Length: 377
Image (cartoon, rainbow, N blue to C red; front, side, top):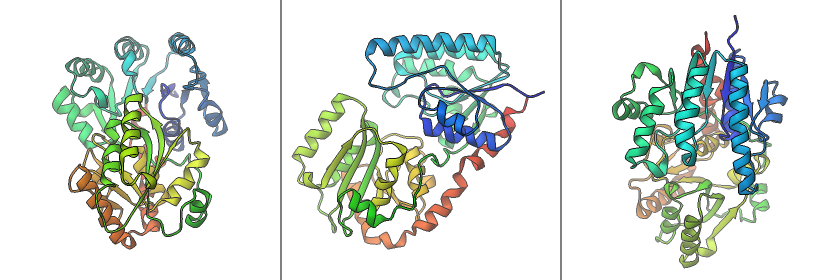
């Protein structure tokens, strides 16, 4: 008898959802995805069964529409699962901090009760901005005790679940994040990409890509640019603000920076079709993070064959070997400046084709092979 398997992304990053689900399907695992306007058409085009219960998730909606949409989603989801009792529910998203009491207790318990087997992906063991909260830790102790299987993306996360939350190691499975193959690669040349973005061929371009938040350390990177080094660099920042306070902080830092003319901010939604030019244009990707377990930006960099300079946090150094990038000796402006200087003095050592070939082990079809047994009834 075929198991009825529901994948519940809960508005999590669409490219992750598409990649993960395609990886499962490649292993002959039939799933139904609870989709949104961001993913329903793409899933259908890939031949993957889905039902759109989330609808419009755009940030452009009014607060009233957001609240109504969220409440409607909860009702539709609960009714759908009661009517179509699944054998397995795999929650692959993230509970929203502002709704954690409802989602982490009520919704979480419901998902466990309505399914025969409940799998939960723990992307971040604790929210980045709540890691010191005793209340949030207590709530997450309940959250992690409930599922039949916990899926994490690093061994560091596995150890934290065991040591800090008392989770039985037998219920934890570890897989890497997979490559983001939803972003198209067209064969765009570096020369053409630089022309499109108004950079000179001999410019030393550093790319910071993704969410602009305190824990991502963009401020460290900007401060590092003021430190004297052998070669001047140009910083391209592409992403979105996590909050208004950090936006003001970064804008003030740039205005006061001696290198302000060499820093470009591109703050807007970047479609998958637009991503390639930024990565191909760059000499190196900067990951000056203060806190992280693992990041999809790293795997996007690997797919394009772009070397990485990163801080020694989370599991980053497990993926950034000496022929892929450089780990800063200290998580400080001085340490990151030194690492960038080392990169630009040695960049001929980094073979982009070799990085791309190494990255193939992280294709979702290879990653999902390791967990296919979890979905066998």
